[in-house]
Picture (cartoon, rainbow, N blue to C red):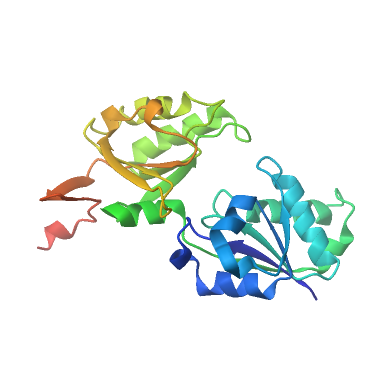
Length: 258
């Protein structure tokens, strides 16, 4: 039985690619990915057959990976961060689900062995760069309404605010979507202080990484792009400084025991 590896390549830095992810890529003969992810993985991809499909071709990428594996080729479908978080793994299983329902015409997919290889997500990488922002309950929300109605996203934003969760926003802005992040800010300001710390992490762990800590009141779409992770603290998150070094952490309540 041929294996399709669903591989998480991490946020960008080579040393954040897990040994298991590297082993899966080494075991594969064919690699399916957006080209940037293959570039970031570097020499481990040498000698493999590359199938580079552009952004926007996610369904085509998933179908191709399943077809290659079903044809007998050990295949790795690669996403940045964790492939199970706003990435390609869910699409593969959605296609398999449709096949099981008789809505696809690719029964050969069901003979493929699937192995999901977890990785380091952008929110984890960002939190680690500034301290321990995810130290208490947190959630993630994608602000892209391409697949999810904005009414649903807005409902989740209010739930996040009422629950006082630390929240990491994925897909905060694109060339065609520039208002959602400011709208999300305004909703959260109904539930937490304007001085709540916010992390802007751009190109996390890559050569041109930038890390900025601002307040929720200062958050603005002009400072965000599609390569930026936005993480907003909860009402108790703290931004502290020791000389030129600064950290953000979210306490769990240990102060009651100190």
